[in-house]
Length: 431
Length: 209
Image (cartoon, rainbow over all chains, first blue to last red; front, side, top):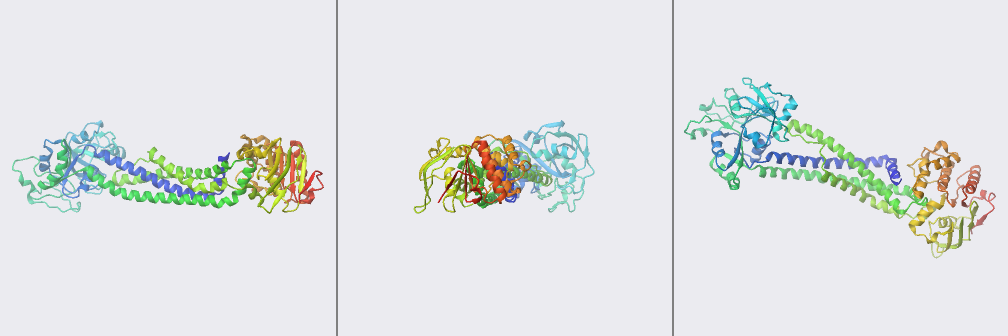
């Protein structure tokens, strides 16, 4: 019955209630979005990083190299010579090596030239069909199959570069031979083929006017040997170091994911490789931690802001309860003369605040989920990264609920004590 | 049944009240009159256990209420004392019916909804039970107060100026109604008032000075 009074009172002054609930909802939804984003973001980054100790790639920003090769987010810093990379891939300390050659996309989904090491390395399963065996055969990620409806046997033409609107390679069609099972990793958003397909696609000597953001440094004797990707940085004369005839001579790839047997190599290769070659070796763990710490600053700033709003909503609850105390003292006196205890009055005031906070929390969680859903839709379009709005983090969001409740209880404690210690006789005598 | 002996009370060293003894049996009505400042409301609050006397005894149904601790006194007040105040107070957010039912829940932890409806019906408020108290006239509000005071079959009904805000006609109606109900429910009714109109209605009277 006390809770019924509290509940009815909550809605009897809708304007006060509305203000407090809006503030609470805003703060709770911001905090819950941040909690979910941070957790899911870190999860996605960490799961794709599994088993990769170092990434070989062109010199430049190591973070860019990691983002482009491991997460398929950024453009790669450039290309590396396949023969040069092969020398390191075949070293005994290497447990497994996954070469990656980028060049084209299909409707914005990257086509990645690699070997059967890629699915092995990331533990990917084929859901339907088989792995690519011949040139121009592709295996597509589960999200692509679902989103654009590619089936086994379908063919399509790749588009040059990493944007949908690039030049279409219409002389060779890719053929879908397999579809990957969903893995929650970036592979869900990739089209995998063999490296030779990417090379052949670009061996036709067509021109790339305006399709690339970087300089074309083609030496005359490799003009027929078109770059294997959109970056087109060719180190001139690089190919002439090798005397033997290598079928891969002059061919380029974008990066190599390495798993090493030897901890010593993990430490030393990032130093040795740039000193002796035109490549760099970057550690995903280091770079991603650097990225998280950058994000962390922004996320903490937003979190403080949201807790600030929650503090203000606490003040709003306090003011609303305190202001109505004067007019409500007759209500309290009435409850007392019908036999209510002092403690029941204390509980009544606390309960009203707790109701407000619970409503604010529930609405905040709901609006947070809706916000995350829209965020996920736009991030999926832009970065091929989706977030799950229906995940519930019991620990973090439970803590958030406790924090919201504490705000309500602290805001109500002074009004509640005032109600508790109300002098009934005096109140009635002065009525 | 309510009895007092040698009850005194003081708000300060200079302001002391010594009240005459009261003896009011079940079904009987006692009218307590007096000018402002003679301690009428103070006496009523003492009888209702809202104030503690400096000396004396107050016995309701053979229970000395001064022997009860704070929470037992709250419970006793809820079950055995019905108070009707000069102004009508309500839980504004609750309906007329819920305001009356609330008193039964606080006192007995059970909701006497049927009984509340029948009392309100008796008092001519049948059509108003689902309205908010603020939608009723002052006379109707006073009758809701009476219904609330009666819901728990109290041994004692304490009424503080129940008629002072009513016109002549309504004042007499309410006073008679109270006294009839006290007989019907076998409660002791104590009316504290300066309302001269009531003096002719009751023969059992005390005047404070």
